[in-house]
Length: 69
Image (cartoon, rainbow, N blue to C red):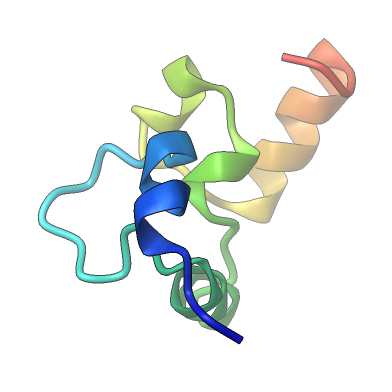
């Protein structure tokens, strides 16, 4: 399967720079899974900027805001 990095970058809301995984979703997801986190794209923009990518934070936000941000 071909990586569509350029297309992925258009939707990537990650504010961490420099990140060599930016736009390479399979590597990003694997990295964050290993760290016990979720990638930036799982969070609304204002929450992503806190860099708290913990599963606990995601669950709290999901509970408070519902499925749609």
